[in-house]
Length: 258
Ligand SMILES: [Zn+2]
Image 1 (cartoon, rainbow, N blue to C red):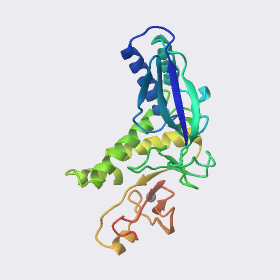
Image 2: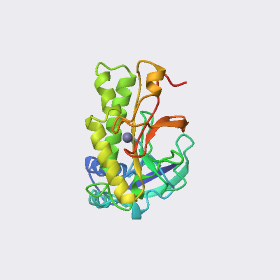
Image 3: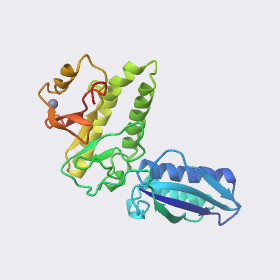
Image 4: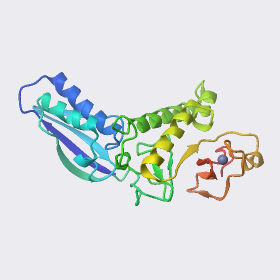
């Protein structure tokens, strides 16, 4: 991941609120296309110059060839608000985040996230490293990749709340771990869409915690086809189960994992 400074300069007298709205909208549209990561972006104002610091998946994530129609529109709105095109300054590589997958067309990939993640929820099946969302040749829906970002936000919210022992933990666990949940249905459809665009088999991760005993958890079958799906050894120390028919992966219940 790469840290960049974006600098916006006013070319005419304008209102602060118009500028603030245009810059925030531009950042949102970049985020919904996977070109920048994270959710909060401080904006510094120094006289007529505004700047913000961003993290991008790749050094060229902000290249216009990756822009969605929404990003292009937001760029026009910056001009309308009285700002010049943003100047991009490369700061450095981010030591704190995962590097992108070495290959954006692996043998398989999966939709996977955790409450700690800011990176793309599309992960390479060979390395588990993230694959930037804007790299798909087609948009996911409505011109960009917002549907995947929204799925990820919801997943992370559920995970965070259940980790904190929320009053609705049981329901939240179903959302991230059960194939009869709403979030599963959304995620599964997104996997199908991603697979269609990329031609790479795209799996879905089911979270698993609790359970009665280690033995029972080890004997767990695929929740969709009820067949054997246990792997001989865990993948990336996370996934103990994988069903190639249903394109699902899961972990041995975290309560019983060493
Ligand atoms: Zn199955």
